[in-house]
Image (cartoon, rainbow over all chains, first blue to last red; front, side, top):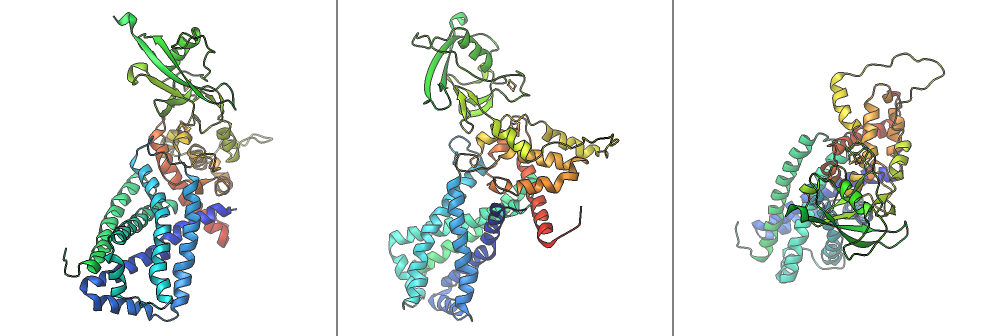
Length: 207
Length: 253
Ligand code: SF4
Ligand code: FES
C-alpha cells in the first residue's frame, strides 16, 4: 500500500499547482491592473474582496494548501544535502534553487500576508495606496521584487517537477522540451509581476 | 628526465569505522599507463608518506579491474568513479582520493555498500522462476524492449549514483536511484512483470520513489550511462496508475 510519504509528496506537488499556482497567476493578474491606474486596480481588488463566501474560499483554496505546502516543503528542503559545488549540473541548480526559493517564500509570504491581508482584517483598507506606501520604501521594493521572482521561479520550476512526479513527462526529450516551456512561463510571469510592482512606484512608467 | 617524474597523491584516511578521518600525502614514481589502482598498489608496496614516515598501507576494495564490479568506487578529485578505470595520465595532480562518505567507511577508501544490496532484496530485483516442477519456457521478450532493458541491466551496484544524490544522506532513508531503476528492469521482463504490483508497492513505501527530488545528478554521474531519471519518471507514471487502481479498486492485471 502507498505509504504516507508517497501520498504526502504527491499531494504536496499537486497542491503546488492547484490551487496555489493558479492563485499566484490570478493574484499577479489582479496586480497587473495597477498598470492601468489606481482606479482599475482598486476595482479589481474590490471584485476579489466581494466574492461570496470569501473566507471559505480563502481558507480552503489558499491558507490550508499553502500551510501544508510550506510545512512539508521545509521538511523536504532540510532533508537534502545540497551539493551544487561538486555537481554543477543545470537540474541540480534547479533542485537547489527550488528549495531555497521555497524557504525564502515562507518568510516573504508570512510578511506579505501580515502586511496586507491581516492589516486589512484589522481595519486598514487594502487598495492601491496601501501598496504604493509599502513600496515607497526602497528596502521593501527590493524585498518584494525578490519575493515575486522567487514565487514565479518556484512556480515555473515546480510545474516541471509536477509533470515529472506525476509521470506525465518521462523521456529525456519530453523533460527537455518541458524545461524550455517552463522557462517561457517564468519570463512571462516575471514580466507581469515586476511590471505591476513598478506601476505602484512610478505610475507613469511604461515598459 | 622522465625517470624522476613523480605523482603526488593525497588520501583521506580513516583507521576504522568510528575513527576521525585525516589526510595523508604520498609521492610515488611515475610509470606509463598507470591507473589509480596501480598507484595505490605502489603505495602499498612501500607505505611511506611524503614526510618519509612509515605508515600503514591504505585500504581499498577491488575485484574485476575492468569497471564491471563496482567495488573500487571512490571519490577521485571530487568526483565519485571507479579507481580501476581512472587513468593517472588523465587526472589533475595532486590526485585526491576520498571514500564515498554516503556509505559507512570501513577503513580508508573501503566503504560498506550493504544498503544497496539490502535495497535490491527489498524491491525483489530478480525474476522468480523456482518451482517444484519445470514451468517450461517463459514468455518471450520483444527485441526492441530487450535492447533498452539491457542498458538498465548494466548496473554494477557501484554506488556512484547514491553518492551524487543530494537526497541520499543520513537524514533520509531514500534507497537511491540504482535500486529504483532495477524495479523498472524487472517489471519490464515478461516473467518479472507477474510481480509488478508487488515491486511498485514496495517503492511506494518508506524511503522509496517519493524521496526523489529530481536533481538528476545520478544520470549525469553513472559510469554505465544508465538512464536513471527516465526510469524514475517511468516509475512515477506506473505508481501513479497503481495508486489509482489501489484507491478505486481494479482487477486489471
Ligand atoms: S546505476 Fe550506475 S551509478 Fe548507480 S550503482 Fe548502477 S552503475 Fe553505479
Ligand atoms: S575493480 Fe571492478 S569496477 Fe573497478
